[in-house]
Length: 304
Image (cartoon, rainbow, N blue to C red; front, top):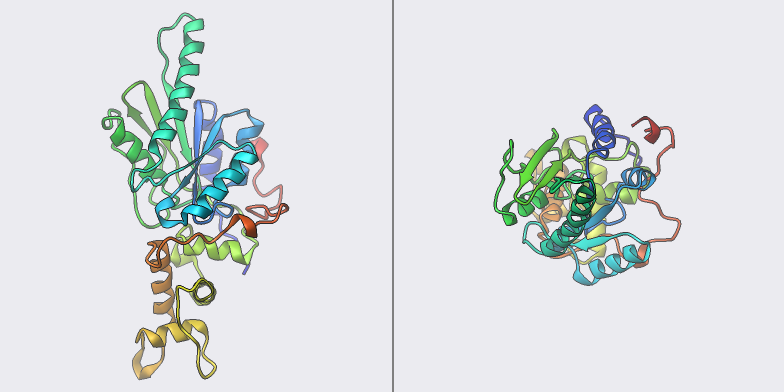
């Protein structure tokens, strides 16, 4: 299941992040705790490292992930030298450690400003990541905890589907902080079937852009292996057909409605209806695994 989807607004968004790096002091790079490998945007990470820009990775949506698996990912990432915090922006968990990271950066910015004879200087943060990892929810949580929005814009819009944030916003917070929200940006190419399925299952790719029969079948198999679905195909049925039949999802003439079944599985998985579920475990990741497979010349970082 090879998938290539890099709309113009995503290419533009990647270029804009490159431009914004000149203005910001810290990047909060948000990933989905259910799929820490597939939701990492290695291109952005590489850009940050090459430009010497500090960043903190936020493993968000931990309320939907398995706690033991999340702890293992945090340990692995820290071993790799990545500054990482686990959080649930929706539930308000893990926000204090993020605020501490921001406070440490603010202290360094103020120290540099005072050495130049200035009493104060704003600290600018940029929040980035692929679609639907909860960037806007994190911004809204930080905004609410800081006492509300005081800038030219309201807090960031949120939604259950990718693509809600389509423009850059500066959000002013008390204490001399400014946050930049960015649109979710996927990779130019997703070559791994497993990675594609994980991104689809967690809502990083809009359903309108999915081959629903393939994704639904793959997701049904995945959920069966994880014990979330107790469905057994009969008489040559596919897993997706078995799900549709077991739920009474029928078209006229008694034909099973596999598209409706696929929508059902995707919705329930996105919303955590099966209970906490981490789709990617540390033990499943090989050292040579990379979050994306893409040609070096797909998006030239030097041109950003």
